[in-house]
Image 1: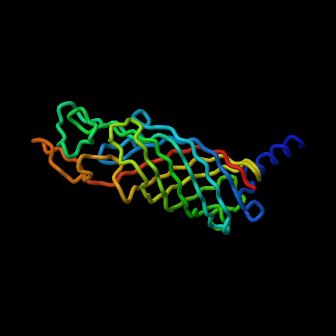
Image 2: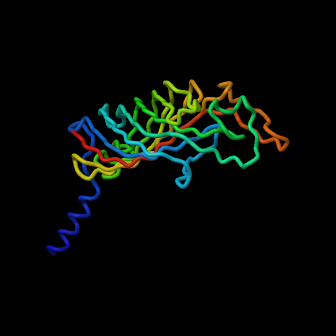
Amino acid sequence: MKKNLIVTLLLLSTLSAKGQSTTNKYDLTLGASIQHYNGNLGSSFFKFNTVCFGAVNTSFGAYLNKSFDVNITGSIGHFGYHPEHENGVVVPLELRCPGCEGLGMGELRSLMVSGNIAIKYKFANDILLKENSKFAPYVYAGLGLNHLSDNMKRNCVNVGYHYTLVSGAGIRYNINEKFSIGYNLGIGCFVTKKVYNTNTLENAMIVIDSDHTNIEKRKDLYMQNTLSLGMNF
């Protein structure tokens, strides 16, 4: 009987735990991320065996109501991509960066410092899930500002500040009232300037060779896969 009671109490303890709420209106998280690139050079989204870089980040969140929080996030880490063009594909001079030495597109490698502000919608809001649910999924959207610097010193990075639209989704596991662990998938879309610096700064759609290989004009994106530890207070 005593053994059954202990098992029952343990099961109940895994189903609910107060996280960020009216009594704990703020949270601070520290995390580690893997950053991926998607743009005219190619894409490393969800390709962990290709070029991707690490970053560290921190986030401060403030409770608005049961459904919404506001979050301010900052991160620093390397960002870039190495093109996977086949040998022999000639890229027009105007689409190469000034420091390119080969026939194709050059390599992009930058130090990226990012900050953003976002509104987060919480599914653990007593409508879809209990507010004190152990598992607390969410989605968010907001605005960001990113600073890129040229690590390689080849003038292949459009150095300076870049505005981004940010969005993402994640889930938090509330260990207890004070601490949590979480996973977050975030996407940033550069909306003002190109990340890769070409000789013309215009990555228009151009036919490269007789096989009609194209470089498309598209927005640069970055993706962050983040594991974090959070504290509510």
